[in-house]
Image (cartoon, rainbow, N blue to C red):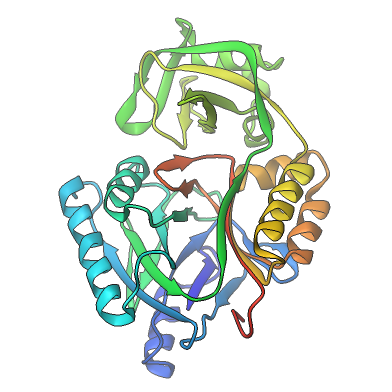
Length: 349
C-alpha cells in the first residue's frame, strides 16, 4: 500500500501504528504532502491510500535514513540489495519493474539521492516525489513498514505484469531573458545575486514586478529554467528571504545561467501527456501522479484549478502535491510526473 497524507492534519505515527496493529502483513510506504490528488481530484487535508493486489504486484521497500551523511556508495548499496530481494521474491527479469522514490523535500539531498538510485537501477525507470508539509517548510515525514522518519528517503521496487508507462509533463517554455547566478550558497540552495545585483530585485524586474510584490504565486507563475542536455528543466523558487535573497527547491550554484520561462496551458499540456500515455497503453486504468505544489498554486492564480482537478479525476490520477519530482536520473521542479497503468483486470484499487 502507498499512502500519502496531510502533515498538518494527520499524524504519521498514528497511521503506521494502526497499520501494524490492524494489517500486520501489509507492506506500506508513503509520505506527507503539499496537497493530495484523490479520486475526486485536487484536495487538501486528506490521506489517500493506493492498494496493489498481491497477485499482480510484488514490492520491496527500504528506508534510507540520515541523508545528510549518507554517501552515494551507501545509497547505491542499499538499492542493489533491494534489487536482489525483489529478484529472489518475484523472479523478475528487469523488464516489468519500476522504482518509486519518496524523499524529504527539505533535505537538500534530492539530486544526490536520485542520481545514486538511478545509477544502480540500470534500465528500471525511476519516478517519485519529494515529501511536503502543506507549504509550511518546517518538517516532513516519511513512512515505510512501520518506521517513521524525517531527513530520509524511501525507495520501493515493484514488479508487475500490468502494463505501465512512465511520463512527465511541464507547462513552460524558455524566453531570451537570462539570469546568471553570481553569488549563492549552494548547500542551502540560496541565491544572493543575479547578474551581480540583489537576487529578488533582479528576478522581480525580469518578470515585470517589484521585490515587494513577490509571493509564492509569483514564483509559480514565472518559473526559471536551466538548459541540460538540450532540454530545459525548472529550478523553482521556494521563497524570498528577508535579506532579498531567494531560496530554491533545486540545486543551485554560482555561474548557472537561468532563463525566465513563459508559461503554457497547464491543462492542455497535462491532457496531452495523459492522452499520449493512454495511446501507448491502449487505455488507462489508473495513474500514480506526483504534481509539484507550484503547479497547483499557478493553476489557482490563473483560475484553472477546477479544470486541472477535473482532468485528473476523469483520468483516474491518484497521488500528491510535491516539493519536487523525481524522473529517471533527474530531480525536477514544477513538473507533473506519473506512471500510467494500462487496462487490466483488478489492476489497482
